[in-house]
Image (cartoon, rainbow, N blue to C red; front, side, top):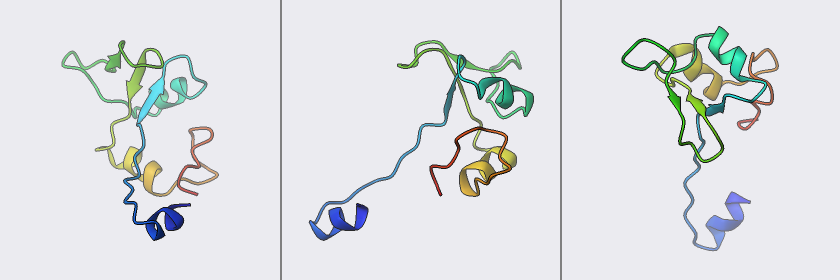
Amino acid sequence: MLSELKQMGMKTIPITQNFVIILSDNYPTVVKENLLTKGMNGENYIINGFWAGPAGLLDIFKPQTYALFNNPSKNCPIKNLNFMA
């Protein structure tokens, strides 16, 4: 699809949202794996005003979180993280 858009002269910017909704099945996993950003109080930072509901923000500056985005695999602790596959 992206190659077709390029042929039509359209430029695209792929993006991903690195949020995990607190009601998702993956939220306990990212908390357990310590993959969320922390607030000034040292607790997981929750964005209550996120459009899909309260969510934690994955800390992509942590090597283990960064690795998930760059090399998702079948052994990934986060379910359905196959957007790069």
